[in-house]
Image 1 (cartoon, rainbow, N blue to C red):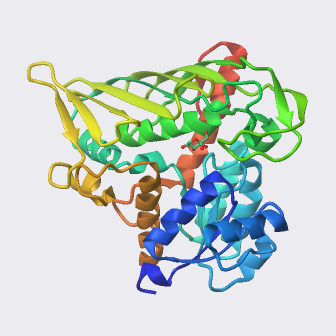
Image 2: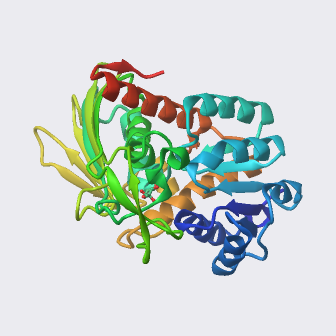
Length: 382
Ligand code: SOE
């Protein structure tokens, strides 16, 4: 197989993020073979909305379709493990949404299954693929900030800030025991670990549920959408917010706050890394600008520009400078690299997408955070 236009792709999940995956698949020129919804009706509706030629009736139908090479798993978290296992064992390459699974026991097994299958198996930590985050990864690896000292930041949203806001992620049986930390906190940890070249080793965490009673709509409600009609009072135990202190193996220290109830903050991710020579910082709402801080020279803002970024940053970009690249572009850049690796027969040196090992680490991270919050003490990850 020689070209991306010959790759056949199926998407599981027809919600908000399934749609985002589909835009990128189409833009890459791969063949969207069909989608699988959570019911035949939702599948048919999704296929229409996503312009897919068919709605599959089951996971087995996707596995049995020889024209499908790669499957994107964008179903709710509780479904990932069984679907990914069946797909890899059925000979498909997989791109799985984050968090990879519900528990680290599941994700450990998924790492093993992917290794045995010898297929490309990626976790969709898309925020790595803003070109300036790729640039920062290379810059730090090349010694550009000196020794890492202090890593700070946040990931804050407001779409679950009211008691009438509802989503499957609120329920531990659908989304996992940790909600805000699992859903968006792991993005921040994955991203900063990718940039630093090291993952945190220990955590001290506090979790809070500010809205323990919510009004669950009787009917289905899509992510980031409001539901109308009758509601059922429902008790919630998953985390609305978290404050987490981090210790890194190198001696670096960090702190991050996570919230899905910060009014006005729609999708606000900030990282700020202080090194012994320079500092760097990036904010998701101005993604084409990277702050580089100096002590004895004027600070700089690097704008996303092919000529000014290093090769790793440039490889992830697709639009000329000044033509702002955003959320949807990161999926395109990520899938472009993954599909290139499928065509090349496996992960290539220099590939920067998150592996199942990275996804497994995030599950260990979540479990350490939970244990730390329960015991009010430092907990080692893994
Ligand atoms: C909802 O919190 C969500 O869609 C996350 O699941 C995504 O990973 C994040 O990038 C945007 O917000």
